[in-house]
Image 1 (tube, helix red, strand yellow):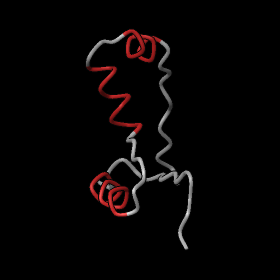
Image 2 (cartoon, helix red, strand yellow; image 1 turned 120 degrees about the vertical axis):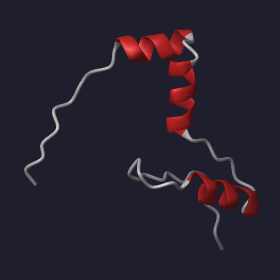
Image 3 (cartoon, helix red, strand yellow; image 1 turned 180 degrees about the horizontal axis):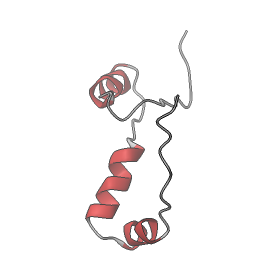
Length: 66
């Protein structure tokens, strides 16, 4: 029987898994939180937390040589 307390879904940003995870949470009576959406909401809403995240953001170099 499926009885997980926490399920973490790590995926590439280009993959839209929000609808699938939402449907699974309804089916199995679980809580689904999209951390990406939560962070984006705080940053675009200029909340105290969003401003702090923006201020402390660090750029990463992109390595295109695989």
